[in-house]
Length: 99
Image (cartoon, rainbow, N blue to C red):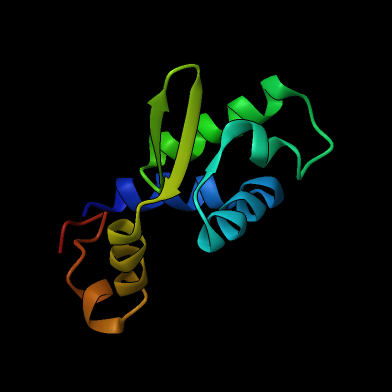
């Protein structure tokens, strides 16, 4: 994965609400209305957060009728975990010099 992709993922996780959504989804898949019940925010604000999480690839959405069900992209989380291993970081080219 390129450094740009990691940057998008970390931006998506750099928000308390989105982190809480991820924590909720680690326990079970949920529909949008069930996730919204956990927060004191508007539906449009929750939609914005879910859009950022799905665009980053961390959360996958499946539309069933008028409902959208969300679940974690476990493969991507595994890949992100590997980013923090020193050997993996060494393999990412420098954005300044390419080395």
